[in-house]
Image (cartoon, rainbow, N blue to C red; front, top):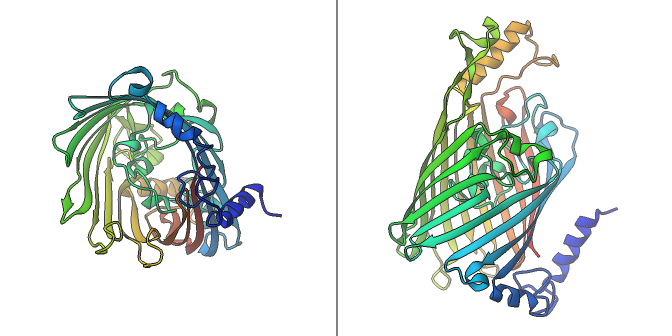
Length: 441
């Protein structure tokens, strides 16, 4: 039997090109459910813009990996929100309010098929999976512009990756999707986690702006029972990111260049040494702590070609890198490069094809700690259940094709390759077949 979710998606995909404009599931509507006989557009005109979105991802281990028992896993996310234009509603100029809740579900093929379950993988072949199958308050903030909109202030509950180190999510592998600092820094929480925060952005010109933020660092916000927590109990400090963003056009081709730095005021635990400066697992002393953590990131995205009759079609290149505190971080650096060609086929101008590769490098100190743990326990055999796998470097690659079925629906079949899953060289390189669905209702 086909799961109800799959049946709904299949019917929508078949019907999309067949219905007439203005009806639900029409191909040129931004919403699958249509405009509700004009009611939705009327609400937006009055200042209330409703948002309903869905992301679903299937991952199947088709070769290699830790467990060659072939299967497929499904994960998804529903998000429901509303954007309130407070100028239209209350007469507050250049002000708005955002409210969003999200629900995640499902399982991840990376956890026990691609990677060794004792350590998992460093990345994920299904980026939408994570933080548990729960409802969460994801956005609740007030935003106000000043000085002819050169200064923008945002305050409330939201995540760092919405503004800092942000990146599109048109791949299924996590290393090519969204804010990468949140994947490796350990103190930076991406969607759907939320925390109390304040962000200020100032535009020096239409192409150049700088921003700075202060975010509550509270690990308890990641717990499943705290999806709607508003209190500050459990706060350990604050994360302070700063970023410079340049968005130029070269010969009319758009680009975006980001450089940023983050500092955390919360204590960080050393991944190797104890308070006496020796390996903690050998000395028996507690791991030493530091008074802060820090790191930086770089991001580049530039369109480099275009079709003469359609400037939106063409080749875009991107690269991302993050670097993290070597004393207290599991991953000390990450790098990725990739390319996306939109409208490769003349008859499919809104489709896109993407290819990318990444490296996730484990901190040598963290690696030594695993080796010392095995030494202290007298374990040498990788197949011993108590063995602590030693992680080094994981490489990920993805090739995908995004089919623009309708303005409200994109499906993205993809093939992923994971070399040294989890950075564990004893694990066979893996192939993952994926399928991603992005829809707005």
